[in-house]
Length: 201
Image (tube, rainbow, N blue to C red; front, top):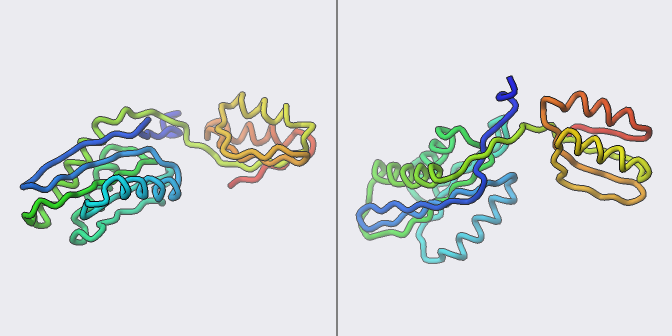
């Protein structure tokens, strides 16, 4: 049952290379958790590979399957982004971005050739990734007065919550992710502390 509350994601970045008729395809797989992460990684790669003709990519973020994108970056429609996304989904992982940087070798590969190249480069990069299992979390925003901070933080540590943002002044705001199996129980416990307000986000 607990497996339904977990998802797989790469622990760190990996790279792979695929060559076909002079064209070079460099695949980069990264763990990401937001569209901002994706933009930042793309900017870095575009600076690293200014002479590449295409920076095609796909990502999937979150556990509901709703946040994803496939981008062909000028390649024929469906020949790059979709095969990349297809490999991410075949691997059964999320919170991942794969960018395939292409250096053109002078010979056109045609759509089947491109699909094969983007698919293979992505597959190789993902096969090298060491995957970790993480809890699916219920994201919450907790608002409270400073004197009860110790109790709030104690409960968050106890349920192994991830703290994403904290602003600890006289009036405190913490955004955290509570592992789904414990979410209801710990939201109830937090709400019992005097003056604590818990909002789902």
